[in-house]
Amino acid sequence: MVSKEQPVPMENDGKLKTWFKRLGWAAFWFFVIKGTITTIIIIFVGKKAWDALF
Image (tube, rainbow, N blue to C red; front, side, top):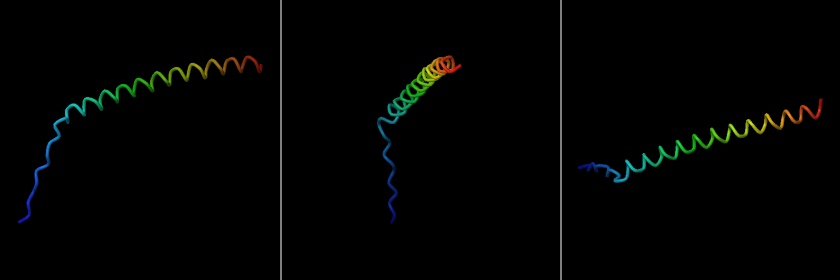
């Protein structure tokens, strides 16, 4: 006879999902802020370089 074992549910499954959602939002905002700052720096440096060349 083949025994079918029931998978043991994880006790912390809800906590793990919440942790990953928080990590996802933190990563999202990190990259939004990082991209904004990087864009501002590139534009600022580009304008200074453009003014210096021409």
